[in-house]
Length: 143
Image (cartoon, rainbow, N blue to C red):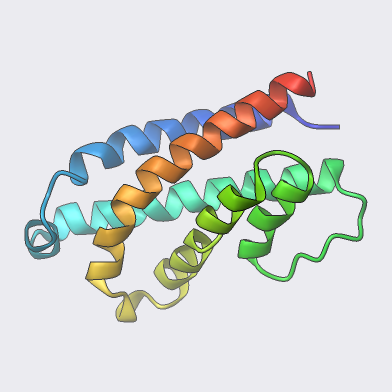
């Protein structure tokens, strides 16, 4: 059974993080890369957004999946949500690669390409706002 409170809390946290990320998206690559406070904040906010989404994905899969879903990577969690009808497969293919950025941020901190982080800002703002909308609609259907 879906834990509506858990899902709503995670969505709210993602939306709050998106609102903190928005002002950072206004900076050029050079402005962001040369300001360690802004750059570090960008990395951390992106990491939190993606990690929270993965948590949500895993919860939905655990509660609604049939148990035979192939989930080897964090990217797979996004793809399998499309199989559950949470959002279209095309959207899953767009957002799933963001899990790779999360892995880079978490596990390869010294090798992070600042340009990749900067380029991910706009994508994250658009994709994760849409992700939250899809989850809210899905949750309403399963209320």
